Amino acid sequence: MKKLEIIGFGGGCHWCTEAVFQSLKGVGEVEQGYISTATEPEVFYEGVIVHYHPNLISLEKLIEIHLITHHSTSNHSMRSKYLSGIYVFNNDQKILSDKILNELQEDYDKKIITRTYDFGNFKASRPEIRNYYKTDPGKPFCKLYIDPKLKILEKDHLDLLK
Image (cartoon, rainbow, N blue to C red; front, side):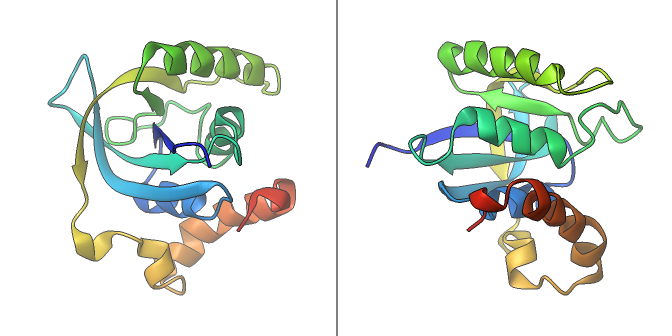
């Protein structure tokens, strides 16, 4: 099997983002924590690093899933904490991610605010809050915020779920 590739995503609570990507076939590992951009390496946003098998799930599908499971067209008041971004690790990823975002924009009435950023740094979340949804999916936060995102996937991308 081909080596895993990595990509970073942010845009909402990292507990939500972690649960979304952990639910997908082809995703090997999801690191939950805080990500910075290369241009502002000391400013961190909630996010995840996704390790995935590109022969099982494409970068295009990952980006599509990311856009539909967070407010990718909303510049809401929490953007200082939840930067809507795709954190890339090389120039080829950046070019491809930008191309995918431009193509997916055609499916949206509003402008997608999600942007690609060169990856800066990563700080993992405390161990006790990692795998938040997997640990206790019955928690009120999970029911209120994570379950609706997973229901979107069940409705539109059932074939991609583990």
